[in-house]
Image (cartoon, rainbow, N blue to C red; front, side, top):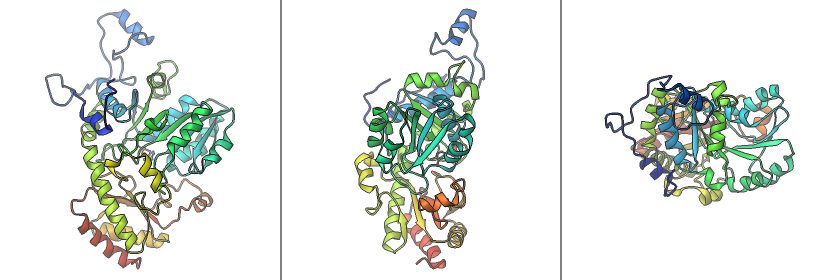
Length: 402
Ligand SMILES: *Cc1c(COP(=O)(O)O)cnc(C)c1O
């Protein structure tokens, strides 16, 4: 792979893929299985002795390979494998690494589905997870034992937008020879975890990378050896659990990732504009681009600054009732949609305490400052953000926040 790449956006831009008849987009390989001229060749492929041949689309497919190559280049990693959803990427990755008796140390502020998987599902396989505040590095090291196989965190946590100190966490992971898995869903292009020492980088493609809210999808990026192990016909979790992405979907996401750099810049520009305005208006705003954000300086140190601080913004309305009225009002004013998920071209908002993080028990939510009044907003690609600000301000006034 060409390693002389300057920025993650250029890594994607420099891909040159011709379609079968010289098309400017690669042809879609609409096949579940592939023919062989000789029986011997097929045997070699099955035994993993021959690379670059397609066999069966649960293993790999040319269309999924184009997209996984684009993402592995963006993440400066040597390999990637796609999956049917972000959760499929997370679960197959963990199940590939952990055996019965192993342990995971995870950030306590992670995506609700990931939290539920670790807390409720993995104990069935005798895999135990300790949840910690990964912004406190010492706490991680204290929990490490011989059984620890994985340290898990998100670049920007959901929904509190805390930034993980990946360079420091990776130092600990390397010291004890533990794999560091980082979920980079909130910050594609903005953060490059592999350059800070992450061993595995995961995305839910459902969000910013696809950006059209028309599908779910996921990816695992790592070194070639780990990716090969995931699709090993005898022991790979991705191969045996079978959460593959379809070729048609992979080709549609590939077209969308080509505009990711422009979208991320616009999401970030719009989000910081609103964050500054609402802060000045006296609202409680969480945004990593604001100086009062606890990891603002860390983010400034580690981000690829041309892409800004991301498109996610949180406003604390204090109560569940106010959160609900505000969201209904914003939807009525056509500012965006009251819907979970993020990274869409139109603004999306939800109250994470009541929806995406509801898997986290109330007691734990209180501990982490996850109030029921939080409204998480994924800022859209609005052309005139000043106009949006005025409309949003009217909604805030209606619920007496301003
Ligand atoms: C949405 C999300 C996931 C899960 O992805 P799906 O595509 O919905 O399965 C995982 N991690 C984060 C941070 C997410 O936002």
